[in-house]
Length: 345
Ligand SMILES: C[S+](C)CC[C@H](N)C(=O)O
Ligand SMILES: N[C@@H](CCS)C(=O)O
Ligand SMILES: [Zn+2]
Image (cartoon, rainbow, N blue to C red; front, side, top):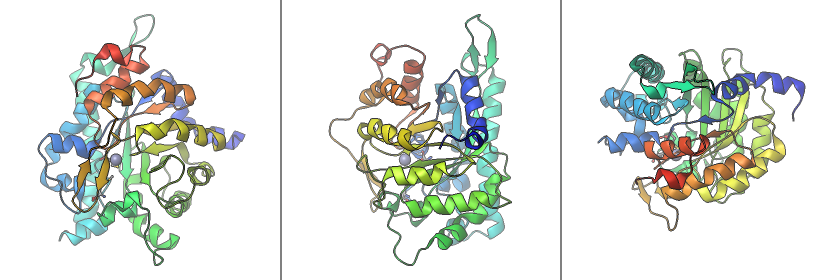
């Protein structure tokens, strides 16, 4: 780890972080915000259903997060797969068009935001000089388990018949399309096992998949990914790939994040990204979230300075977090205490 070559290849994120003042803010729960706007995503396509039925809501959610202070917005493609769209009766061409559209909508939202010239889209340096807020578009890629649509992101158990080659074949065309769609990078999210991380690394080595990426794992216990491998060994897989510009954890309870950052720091010098969920637990069969004891949005935001001190530099939220969470993170990073921000839940 930390070789000169790897340092050079992670420059996209390092330069971006520098422009942002050292820390960057990722958006919050995307599907969650779609639901808050009235979308029904109880469907095998989950949030990707809105790419077909309500693209205007997708734009709205991106704008919500930009207005809240996000520097990185993720596309609605988490559960958008060619196989999933075809199962709904769409043609392969239509499915590929929707994947491209997911990125176009996000880039359009960034343009709308910039054109609004609202106060929030400008940052001011110490001398009071204004500059446009840096914003990256990350193309979300959910796991094979997300496509299964039964919550198996949180088990990582695909059975003995699913090999690394199966996973590469499953993801290849989707990743090729997202690579050429205008996104700044790919966000491999909610990765539940080591096998899928290895498949993604192999795909990133293929010649027509030339784009930076981040790898973000999920954990149910603060030590391992759901399938059982340690987060440390999974992070080593990600660290080995020169196209990986950040490594981290998402859709994991906030209480585990501090220890996980400590583990990641043992095996990587790359920027660390964390965007936990609310701490609630997802029931993949009913597609409902079960309330957990003792973790509130205020707790989440109050952890942020600890995560920063531990070595993370990109912060956001995943499922069940909202624009309010993102505003809270922005306040902490800009030096205002979360208590002072008096978050409304
Ligand atoms: C990150 S989970 C909440 C995504 C939804 C899941 N793949 C499902 O379809 O139920
Ligand atoms: N980007 C996705 C991740 C789900 S785990 C979302 O926020 O809905
Ligand atoms: Zn999530």
